[in-house]
Length: 338
Ligand code: GLN
Image (cartoon, rainbow, N blue to C red):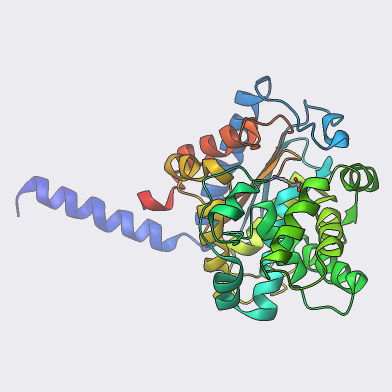
């Protein structure tokens, strides 16, 4: 054999041996330090960025500290990588839609969601009424307000109280701890939710609601007021990444067969009328909320969550998008690039 070929073969063999000798934890700990480093870098890079503006159509949201900034990544083993304000809580807002969708899927199956609610993008803002009219009375998907209120109305229950209990305990199972409502946000949003009530009544007129539209809107409003930290959101998204098993509590929260369906809707409509732009930049299913949180999922690997209240014109957190895109880029997490 030529000397160079021999050398290449030797390097390959040695490489394989040392790779094979490494225990899974050693392999994991290498990437663990890399993940920890990149999370810290993202925090430092965007810490002082002041773009965007808190949501103010719900008065309590305008009063949240715009400087809040926390980044958390949770892997499928339950390891946590974090930087910044990771324990400070904000209202979950639209990110709650992901988990109520999971609940209705578990109760009624994924075909029901596709047929009754829809799984297509609207191309219009999250609280659009016109979108319903343009689509024959369909909400189009469970992540715009119309589809989310509709989803909430389909949670099986005898009354609103029971419906709320199921929704709250489902979100808590995803987070691995008992979540509580931010009463101040809830009250503020209840007095600012005429538009959502109008949406729910319109959907009722089209025969789309599973239960009383105004009561469903109130339960939906409460679900949006649930208080969560970046840490909670990362565990919740890691549960979807980890085939429905919460990586911290090890509980199977939703059957594995539904997580690809949930991620598909997140890819199509998670960042509303900028869902395409987001997917183009990162390739990851994600969901934003006007409280300033965004979750993103690396299927089979990580849940990522960032909290930072100032939003762009689409209603998506500016720093959260930038921080997640940075982490995706640096760690090579775009699934389309695998
Ligand atoms: N509760 C908010 C609303 O109904 C949620 C919107 C959002 O986070 N995009 O308007």
